[in-house]
Amino acid sequence: MESQSDQKKEATIIDGKVIAQTIRSEIASEVRHLSDKYGKVPGLAVVIVGTRKDSQSYVSMKRKACAEVGIKSFDVDLPEQVPEAELISKVHELNADPDVHASKFTGSSTSVSYLLVFEVIIQWVSFMQGCLELLSRSGISIKGKKAVVVGRSNIVGLPISLLLLKADATVTVVHSHTHDPESIIREADIIIAAAGQAMMIKGSWIKPGAAIIDVGTNAVDDPSKKAGYRLVGDVDFKEACKVAGWITPVPGGVGPMTVAMLLKNTLEGAKRAIKQ
Image 1 (tube, rainbow, N blue to C red):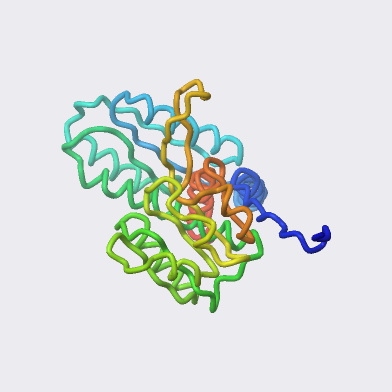
Image 2 (image 1 turned 90 degrees about the vertical axis):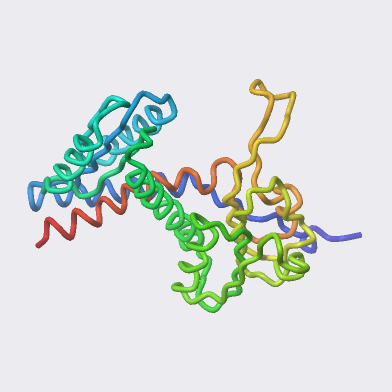
């Protein structure tokens, strides 16, 4: 009979909500220090075009997060049909404001597509930084480790592979045309799952003790839920928990880190500007 000590311990859950809240508390402390010493606080400007509910909800969440940590929020609401010249002028005005240390654009206007691209870049930089922060805050070293990124999209897979390389990991990118992806993934000390395929990575694909950051957010049918579906990652969570050393849940893993890292980047920009 297998003794209790011989039984495989389930993976440690990397709780993005808890880590994000810790980061926010640290930011709040540093903001108070800046205010006390220099009489200034970081400023985050958000320009929203149109009245899309998802954008409004997202901006409301950022505004609440700013208030929580003491960052000043500059909010600019513009109509969906705002002239392009007026929008660009407003963005330049915010960029020139010494009290603004980071800015975001969100909306649905197709006439300002380059601003939308800029917004996506800013958003995903924060998102990807959050992935590495989850590893670091969980005591998982990246340097010298074998990391496999599953997915090669321009906004997740490729950029995060570069961040891992910069952190001195040995990185392999697995994609839809990779031969025998299971054997490659099974060699990884760190797995970043960003393929956009529900539960594609099975427990048998995972090296015992590996760390898994699951970026995937996929809706699957679930009649037991009020909405008729539930969200799952790219990793089969139940199977992976029996093999991996650490794993992020979906939801509640990477997602909560995005706003926290945006606030952290705003703080860092303010520290550079204020201390000059």
